[in-house]
Amino acid sequence: MTNYKSLETFKVKGIENWGIGLSDDYKSFQTKYKNFLKRVCKENGYELVSFMPSHYKFSCFIKGNEKFVYISISDVRFFRNEWFNNILIRTAESEKDYHGGVNQYTSLPCLEAKIKSMFAEYGDVCGSNMAYAYWNKTGNRYDDETIIA
Image (cartoon, rainbow, N blue to C red; front, side, top):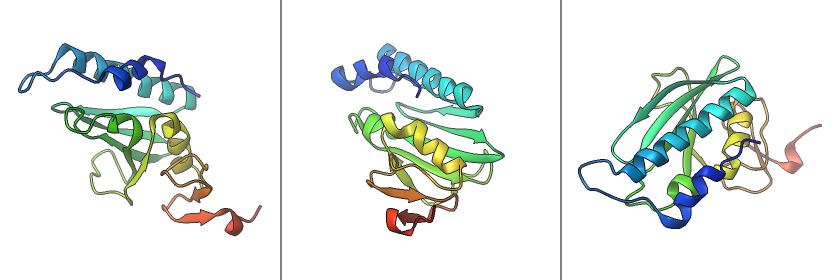
């Protein structure tokens, strides 16, 4: 599992807001988050195909197993720690598909497992803030009782 410790300091102290300009604090945060995503991709044989910075938020597409996943974080000024606890993630048809599959949410500690589960047929219990739920590649939920080994 990829180490996200370099981002934890922002969870504790928050991210400085300079209003209409990006703060140095946010620029550092965004660089560290992007580097974290690059490490996740490198360690799992995926590719960070696009990274779209915006004003105190960003989104990106990751490609793996000929499939795409879209990830987005909310504006860090107004949604403190949502970038850590509530990351939007969904399947996509391509790196231009902003509508994609069903919106799901996960936390930073579970993000790598959630990406893996979206690229695989069945997922991992770590994603989408639902304990003991599995997700197949179309975004359908399966409880433990319905999984056939």
